[in-house]
Length: 273
Image (cartoon, rainbow, N blue to C red; front, side, top):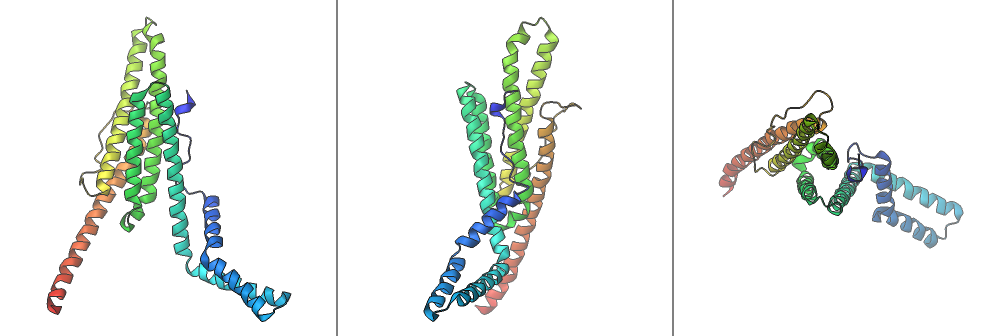
């Protein structure tokens, strides 16, 4: 199988703990709080004419103060680092999809390039909605994992389709109609899986922005028992369907609670008026 069109970037989740620690240290060391504490300790040392022991005591005090500050603000620091890591990971994935789209165009396969371009656009829209507000943060990890898995599997299906088309000439001259039938059946299954993937992603996006109350409705695609084309993709889509349904229900609860808050606040406002 030609690996040039296979998705080779790691998914966003589970997060890279080493990279997360690196980002945490980078933010701590570059923070105005850290820099200010170090500068203040040095200035005090020079101003007081402190010797070596005095400077060491001042810097030790600054280190203790910074440690206390960052411990109190650890949740904010971790949230900011995680957000940066997610954005960094998503950008790497987007660049990988752009690379594959370029490969497909170079190989004169514009139909698959257009297909994958639309997946890329939809992926970016879903990620913007996921991380655009606090209400959806609870779903971000599972949906990110599902979207990343779908994009990887779609690239795999496109690679399989491309490889089968290269085999078509040999099959057409094989004098074996069964081989042609098997090739066509496999191609139809891959195409159906990709179509279903796009439909499910579209419905998930619609559910995220509250446009479609039926987001995540899953169509049934027949799958063979052993490694049929699109089988893994359909498994991932099942997980995504569950997440999409959960989003719809949770969004309804959020809207209901917001409506109750508004109706409760209105009489109070009237009383004060």
